[in-house]
Image (cartoon, rainbow, N blue to C red; front, side):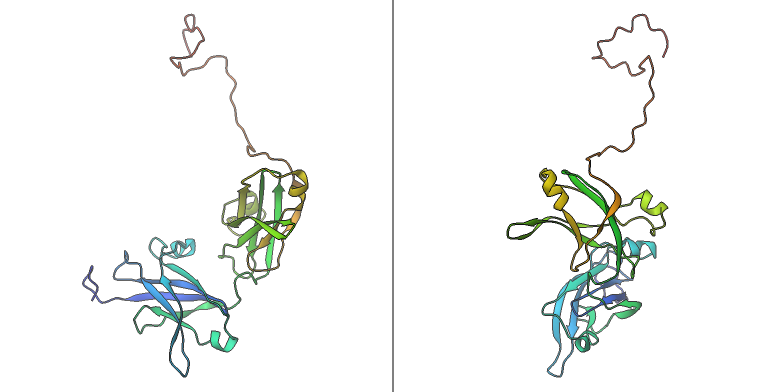
Length: 252
């Protein structure tokens, strides 16, 4: 019985992704929506069960909110090393910790490791101060892709930033790229030289896919893209520290 509601747990959830390197899904107790459940990833074998990973299903998922699963904070993702064989992958299951209940596999189960999908996207802007663009996984429109902003260095690649492309961009939406929430905008921690700027590139995390530069890439730092102003000859704020003499002003 559940200690808060007095009801036995009613588990709900799915394994949405199961590859040789990770599992991803969600888990909740329908009878106790406030609870965040511990889970374990299990690989059965002739010698007995082996727990590959464990954690708490408390990550936020916008997709869960959209399909009406509470506040969406029931998701989990676990990675494991060494990687499994495909035969072992197909045996892996997820359950609430210490329970016999096994999560069902989602109807659209994804079996590719993270970073191995076909990708679409561009780097739209790259200045000495920032970089922006968008990227999406064509095999899974609901997935938000993780990217690495990199620069060549004397001893190999230098990681400038690790970021998730999950920001909304109305231009991306207008050109028909899903709901438009595939964009990224990253400010560098230090200003680059023009030579370093031109060497920066963006790669999908965990893959070899490098985003192409947009045909009309912007190389200038222009953080303010639109300003709307009304020019008048009489301010209506009347700030007490203003030096302007309003003695002859009778209306606003």
